[in-house]
Amino acid sequence: MDAPNLDNLRLEIDAIDGELHDLIRRRAALVGQISASKPPGGLALRPGREAQVMRQRLAAHDGGFPTPAVYRMWREMVSSFTLMQTPGVKIAICRPIDQPGYWDLARDHFGCQIPFVAHDTPAQVLAAVRASPTTLGVVPAPIEADAKPWWPLLASGEATLPNVVGRLPFLAMPNSRARGISAFVLARIEPEASGDDRALIAVEAQNGLSRDRIAGGLAKVGLPPFTSALDQVVAGVHHYLVELPGVIADDDQRLRDLGAALGLESGRVAVLGAYAVPADLRP
Image 1 (cartoon, rainbow, N blue to C red):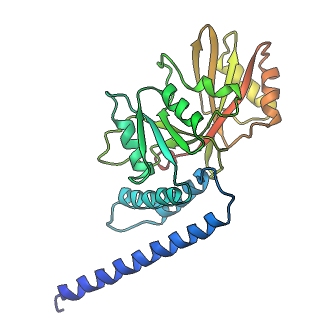
Image 2: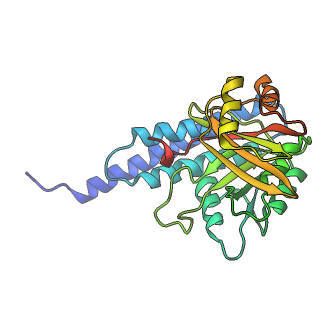
Image 3: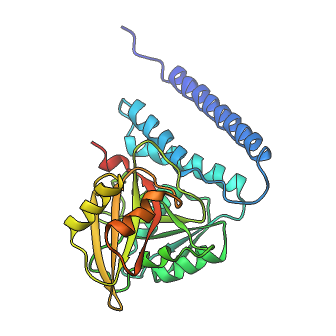
């Protein structure tokens, strides 16, 4: 068999490159039409839809081209189209000097086009998101060792408070400084179901609650079993971050029933948002 002609192969690659570029322009034109059909203002972000798209691309991919590269290509496109529809969008990132990995998490997900602003603390990120409906926040995922947990602040119900709408990384990058850390994405929009999600509920109680009691309360009101429950005490008040399958609306009657089921004489139950389960965490 004759060896392939390298010039012909390169011409074929050039033709494919042209087709890819044409398809990107066509996709951008369709996004422009979608944007024109929407009311002006607001944040053009569909976290559930984006997760569905990424899962489809990852599931369909095969061959020698690296899977993380496919992910980054699509994330760059999706984020650039978000910027097209919301020109003022920004990302406020909690990136302490000694933890640069959070910048990598945000870059790998939101790409290189949307402007990033670094902050030292989650409280500063939360303030930036509250100040602008087109600012997204990236904050460290809660751990029990947090001295000043940020998530209890989301439970007050104030109008400018954001929801948790995503979790990073959705797919870990092999050259990232972010190994072993994770983050939540905050936005002033409602969380969107992707088909495989985790809701976050905050329970505030003056007295401590056992995990068995929380599990019993969830079962009593018809909520699914929790996948994790974090306990932190702030100014003498117990705060529990309960994660469970699905997406739960703010007005879900089961949330109000849960307070009674747990015997909360004072305190509250509030949903903080939801996120699509990352590809790395799915079976």
